[in-house]
Image (cartoon, rainbow, N blue to C red; front, top):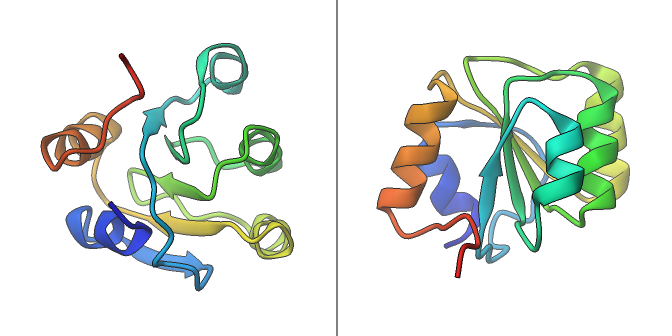
Amino acid sequence: MTIADIANILNATVVCGDNLDTEVLGACGSDMMSDVLAYVKEQAVLLTGLVNMQVIRTAEMMDMVCIVFVRGKTPSDEMIDLAKERGMVLLSTELRMFTACGLLYSHGLTGGEQ
């Protein structure tokens, strides 16, 4: 699945980033960045309702290429600038996290479980 596919499935707005053809193999959904750091392995997409600089920094540490902000949340200009510097795509969807994760899962994107 590509980031463009994710944007289409979630009816998401592209906030920044132009590498929408990037292939992704996994995703996770969390508002607790400590859980992302502790439990996430090899997911390329983070779904979250948390909107602060720590989200961008956490995603960067975990080598994620895309962040999807749920519930219509939009990142600040400062967050957008940092994401652009790091080559990340930021998306925003009106969907709730549970629904967004479910839609992506039903279209074949997994959470990396074996």
